[in-house]
Length: 246
Image: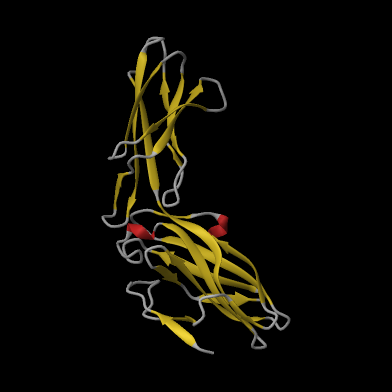
């Protein structure tokens, strides 16, 4: 079987100097082996901040009449992103445990955020094998933060209040949180005693991620901002700021 090699520049726990994978770009299979299910991080997006490590697993289930011998699971993303981990198999289930340190494994590259794919090679005990590119997709995202502050407080009924805030996200190149600009963010309000928030208006963050808008204060309640997220950045809701209306 002809093979090819991918080179990786990264250093650290997940980096490798060479990863051996099949020569053909398309999926390939020999025998009756199949991949029946792939789950990344329990079905949730992988969100990484500026420090500490993120641990998550990729669980693959395969089927063959002779049983599963072993597997090789790797992750591939934008900007030539590549993450690898050792894979162990028990019965028909194979698990790869990833440990990502943003200061080591992400190559100081914000371009790695976005849609990623699981590539999998699985061997059966009788010599059957299957190679599948893009066996599963998931999002690798930059952790986001959002704040909100309503003022002045207390305020007289019918007067104008200003709700400010800021939308930021992890920068894997500087390891700080920087403003996420030109993004739509919803201003939401929950009347005192109510159970749910209502959308009041949608504004866009400034180039530095700042948020600012004005509304009329009519009743006591909680104000907050809500961001629905993008492919590279997860959704986030600010803590609520309670405003007393006199």
